[in-house]
Picture (tube, rainbow, N blue to C red):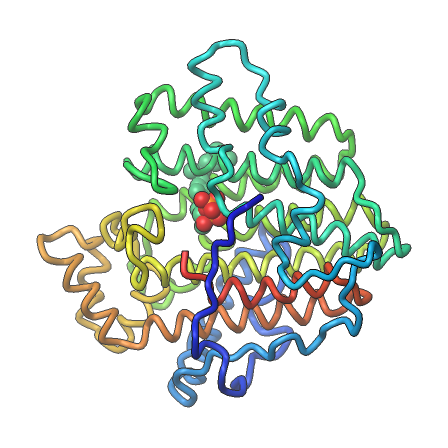
Length: 404
Ligand code: GRG
């Protein structure tokens, strides 16, 4: 069972919500590929809108808790679930054993390396969302309480693609720790770590091909392209201040949200023939995925290393200007020079961190994440009521209040 990885933050949901952007707000809609890039370009006025809203209504973090809750949130077996992770996990028992079975490798070292992160220590955020989305779509379509084997396989594939990308990301970042343990690259070296990531990805591809649905294959292949393009975007930076936020959101979509959005879409395609439902699933995944990454970027400033299982202020040390920095630079324009040189001079990282903590960059990034969560809730609320749909709504709040 995945460990309970969030804690409710007291005081996080107390005031009425501020005006949220209109449903079709720039940057809050659109599939991946060229349209996503266009979305990101449209984020510039949106950035200004967020600035306006957050300065008019600072410290507003409320999500209207469970305003779409299904009256009877019992499952058909009569069990009552208040924890979306427990509800999602019902269809995921044996997840890591099954992933290890997919990694059929005879060489003992490669086997050990590729199985290294499938130890149940991750949050399993992606497979849980996928399992809940599968049931929510099936119930919406024909009231079916059955999760198809192919839909469960998508949950495995999502976790495998995620893990392969973590292994490669740690090589690129020369990271030493993840989930409170040494990284694959630190234990076995970079060359072998590249191959371990490749192997996990190839096992995921074989599992995907076995499902035998070409639409689903092309949906999930898009994720791999997005991951690579997202990582590539992160290697570059924009000189022009006005383009920086759009670049950041496009990178965020590609590196983090695309996997969640497209995995949600894949299970919806397998469970229901209606393209409207596919778009709802995609939009939910996209918006919760962007919110998840925005909060990840906040936690890099507000959390401690023990909690995160990896060093904090890591983004600044890597030269990255994430949401809290970009918002802070609006208040402290002297940060722009540091952003341009990617915090490379001695003292830059510490000074930038201080600026961020003195600014309301953390609050504004959290507020932006809240807007994405609102959009995710609006989308998923279009499905017929079910305990799984409510759990997806609840997850939106957990994303905002998580502390690791
Ligand atoms: C090998 C497919 C492939 C891609 C190569 C390196 C790369 C291109 C992409 C990196 C993508 C990446 C690692 C994005 C970070 C996303 C993120 C927020 C990770 C942390 O997710 P959590 O907190 O981690 O869910 P746990 O440990 O809980 O699983």
